[in-house]
Amino acid sequence: MKLTPHLPFKGNCRQAFQFYADTLGGKILMQTTYGETPMAAQMPAHMREQIIHARMEFHGQSLMGADAPPDRYDGGHGIQLALGIDDLAQAKRTFEALSAGGTVTMPFQETFWARGFGMLTDRFGIAWMVNCEKPMGGAAAQSR
Image 1 (cartoon, helix red, strand yellow):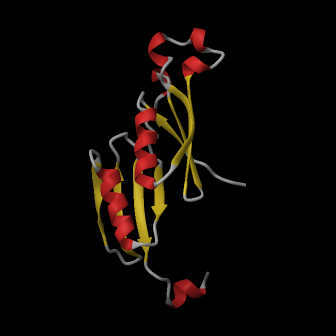
Image 2 (cartoon, one colour):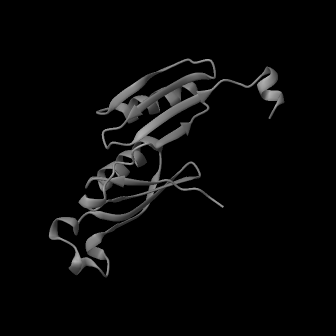
Image 3 (cartoon, helix red, strand yellow):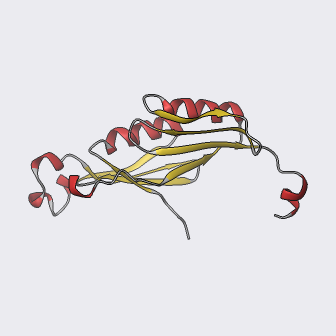
C-alpha cells in the first residue's frame, strides 16, 4: 500500500509541478490536460489547457495534482506536506527554494526535535513543513 498526496491547483498545476521537479530533484511522469480527455468538448475553453492529472516521482516518492474546476477549488485547506531530509544543508536549501515567492510561517531553525525545521506556504498555495530530525536518543528512542 502506498499513500500519494494529490494537490489541488487554481490553474497553475503545470508551473507548480515543474517547480517541484526542479526543487526536489524529481521527474514529471505524466501531465494530461482536460483538452486531451474524452470530456474535452464539455469543458469550457479556458479549462482545456489546464491539467486534469499530473504525476511526478522524486527520491522514491510520488506526488499527484490537478487544476481544479473553479467551483471545486478549495486550496487544500488544513493539509501540509511534511518533507524529511537527513542532510541539514540540503534541508535548508530546499526550505529556501520552496519558500521563494511564498510565505514563511515558521523560519527554518533548530528545535528540540530537529537540527532544522521550518514551515511555509509556497507561491502555489501549498503548505509545507521541512524537517531535518536530530538523532533519537534516550527514552524516546527506546520506545520505538
